[in-house]
Length: 140
Image (cartoon, rainbow, N blue to C red):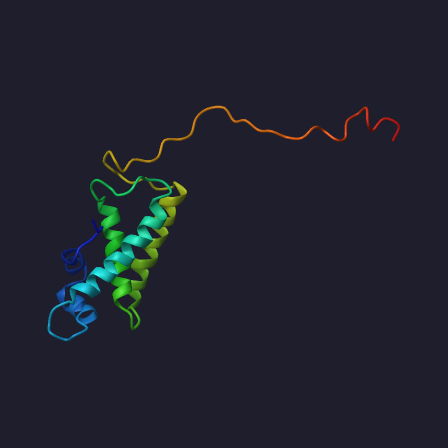
């Protein structure tokens, strides 16, 4: 399941922009493989950041993740150089993902996409015998 869809891209950017950047064969409609590639790229970037905190896949996609996926895919589609507002959205999305990865932002997720439980228990360590003891250093 992708975090965003063609409809999400169109809702954010408008059909004219999406047609302009995703209609590589110039038939008047966005090419499905181009859209799928951009959305897949966005999913991979998002997964790289959120898998440190959440079990994937999400049962339902949080709205914030959808917004980030649209921003990343839109940036990817502008292969000839995105406009500044698209770059700004992309940078905001990546910054948000870094915050999720660092634990500064939590995502509202349903069961199945919960944060991994913190490890509990005893910490055990092994080490060699101490080399420099007060008895061995006596007289120095």
